[in-house]
Length: 536
Image (cartoon, rainbow, N blue to C red; front, side, top):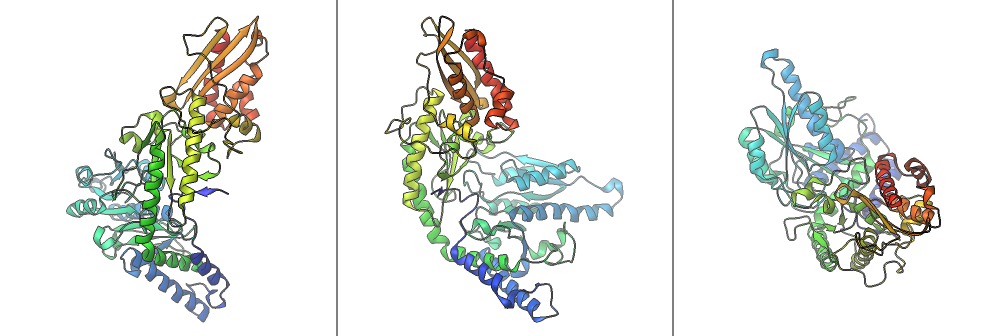
């Protein structure tokens, strides 16, 4: 059974919410379209949706008419940003060309992709965007926002709580700076609503995005808060009926909205208890991870971070391989190795972590249904996995963190996301080099390529006797596919005449192990290392 510690990605649906959704789907009285006011079924659905809107609004201290239901926080973020841009464009189009100014936006480099990519699209269309860097704890200070604003600034978009570290921004302070200049402010609060205090009247924001599936509701339903006084400054980006006060056309999903309302009510009622529970689990996990040598905690303790997120980096361990080594625990990594990008998290770099440490991070997030047993099991599994991967990587200067032999502890039965062949070699016991580089006796050849800071470093140690490879050992820092290919090469090299050379090509290895195209460059590093070893 998988232990779920990825609440920051999505929370398990609360059975009480699921009951409401099922009851709505099967109710004969609520089968109508809420936009069909000509018959009783439509009016019943509309009344239910209106009541639900009140409950959702109450969670953030808003008025019901200020809540626009969407498909989730991604759509809410898009509507807020693109809607403000569209409204401003309408005004600018009515002006003489000489009086038009390029619109300006302010945001941070640590926002969710639904904010980053939307603003980058506006940049491609000619808008200007100032991208703010976080401080040493991943936050965006109000003074940085105040300095970045210009006369032509339309909107500031800053998240309330960071999804990687859980650090909390001073949204009220940022909003105050925006009001001083008459600039609109949008806040992505999908991580914070229901977890910490999030009252739009206190925060003073114009737009606020949140979603049901981060508060134990269903996926596919979210909301955008639009302050009544700011309504004239946002235009629709979707057309076809003028629903939701003209801002978001489309048939309303009655069952999801009613489920959202139930989730919102529960979040409001249980916020203090849920936060206390999550904080207790975070402290328990923090103590356990601190016992692993070479561990650096990236989440700030105390009330300055969300209670249910803990981010940690592990020296000498590559993030994607660590995830694959924890197949029975659902967690996330701050490593960029699973994508074509090799850039580490800018949030972690802001904390002073080097590229290697930034790529070695785990984000563990938990909440209402997590248990102490889940935390304890995860801590033991992480300890063992870190020890084994450090052994494979030949990490030096870091004491062994395991209480048992990592090669014989039932370390893993499967590695999620790998083909059967890749999984077999990824899971086999490591055969690490026996001699430090520069101290090997005659007959031992070494070859190294790559850099850990760039995500891949490989070393081969070959024992050659009378032109035959008698043994092949390796250390490898990299993604699971890289480790699997390296282990397989050692097996293929043993017993082979040295003049045979490298068994195959990186393209051959990629086909054999189902290596994604974006990882082919890492196999070239493996090839460089094995060629260097064969050449002596």
